[in-house]
Length: 305
Image (cartoon, rainbow, N blue to C red):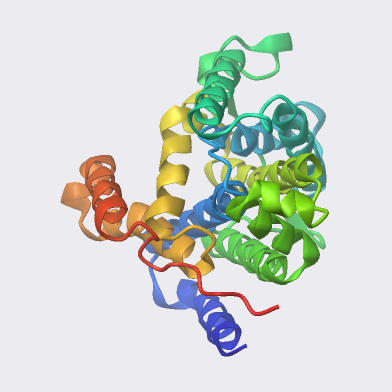
């Protein structure tokens, strides 16, 4: 409870960032919120269910493209596209998990990499003439809330920050609910979990669906933040980055995932001269963590249920 109170206080203090920072840093903070949501969604599958998902950018991309297509072709308001983006991403996660949940370790890793490659190629080939091919989709509108256009960078940050707060509540409750406990049992010992009545197939499918839905949410926010989407934003390296964030920060650890996201997307902005080397530096950090601190920088604490 003490940790929750401190986290809530830090989140509330974050609402004041637009009052203290210039627009460029507010934009960076907005992207931190978006990628933190995406990394937390990866953590559902990797950190809590223990399944090696190296194609998570697929669900991130589905959310972004659903919003972009609906808004630019059918003029659907941004916030109305959000539930459908999450639903379709969740459906894709559940559907793709069907052939995956029987796989383990390296086999699962390779299969998810393949799905990521297929998704990028499909978007580049512009199926049905609706994805814009390699150029992507431009001209995505801005969200409107009660008739108020959220056009400023500060307004967009607050939208992203509130969404992050909602996802953090979901993740906290996941730690304490029956489904969350089932995920922990499966990760520790699938055979033993089965003897306790855990339906491994059902739980794994739900984990993929939940993780994909949260990634779809982040995808919508990402599309709106940039006002454009293209296949290059959802390539394999993005999935690797999300995977690495969870590993480096700490599997199943909310503070760890947030720290990993900050190290990947915020710290390079402080040392701008080194920003182009962030993948190199983060790769070294990942190797070092795996050797010296395999549980991550901020490992998960034991959950009392």
